[in-house]
Length: 285
Ligand SMILES: Nc1ncnc2c1ncn2[C@@H]1O[C@H](COP(=O)(O)OP(=O)(O)OP(=O)(O)O)[C@@H](O)[C@H]1O
Image 1 (cartoon, rainbow, N blue to C red):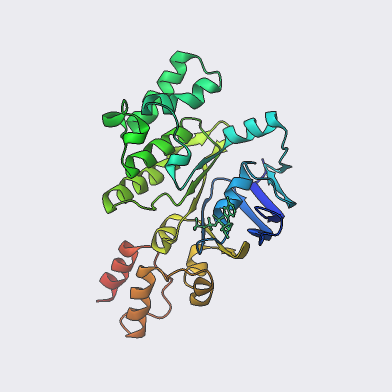
Image 2: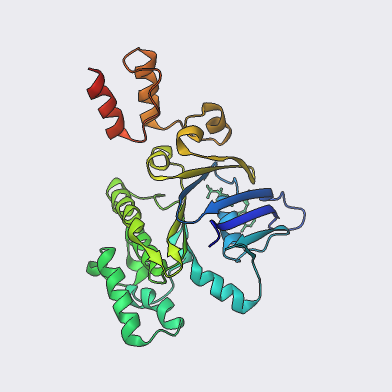
C-alpha cells in the first residue's frame, strides 16, 4: 500500500480570473496514519487546499493524488472520493442541513444505500460515542456552536472515512467544548477503515495543541508551503513561526526561559507537553 495517502504537486488555484492565486505552486504530502497539523495565518490557503483534497475545487494547475492516483473529476469518482475524504468545516452551518440531529447523521449512510437497520446501528453508535444523546432529536439549527461541531464530526465519522480533515475544530468554542472536541480527537486514534488506519489532518492556530498531538506539521504562508516536518523542529523555530504568524508554543516559552536561567540543561530535547516539562523540572530539583 502507498505510504502517502495524499499528495499535492505544484497546485495553483484562484477563485476568479484576475484574483490573486489562493494556492501558488503548492506541493506537499500527507502520510497514511500520521497525525498532521496544517498551520498558517488567516488567508494562507488552508481551507482552499482542503477543498481541493476532496475535489470540491479543481486546481487551475498541478495535480492532487489520492492513494497514488491523480484525482478524477467525473461525478461518480468524486462521490467515491468524498466517501473516503471527509471534511469537517470550520463553520458547521455549511454542513448541517437536515431537520433533526438524528436525520442529519443518518443522511450519509442512507444516501450511500446502507439498509435502514444497519444505518441505524451506525448512527446510534456514533451518537453514543460523541455524547450527542441529550440533543439527538433537536433541530440542528437550534444547537449551540459546540454541539453543532459535535454533530458535524458525527456526520463525517459515521461514513468511516480514510482521511479525516478537521478545519479549525476549536474555533469559537468555550474552554469546556474545546476539551470535549480535543478528547474526541484523541479518541480517533482507535479508528480505522477497511483500507488501514484513519489519517487525521487538523488545521489549527494552536501551536501547543499541534506540538502535543501532531506527528507532522505543515506551515502555510501565502498559498505556499513554508515548512513541513516534525513538530519539535518546526514549532520551535521562531523565525518560521513569525513568517507563518504563529506563536511559539507556551510550553516551549517556559522551557526556554528555564534553560536561559540555567535551571534546565541546554541539551534537553524540547518537551511535547506540560507533563514532560514538569518531569524535567522534577528530575532537576
Ligand atoms: N469563496 C471565495 N471567493 C474568493 N476568494 C476566496 C474564497 N475563499 C477564500 N478566498 C481567498 O483565498 C485566500 C485563502 O483563503 P483560505 O480560506 O483558503 O485561507 P485559510 O488559511 O483557510 O484562512 P483561515 O485561517 O482564515 O481559515 C484568501 O485570500 C481568501 O480571501
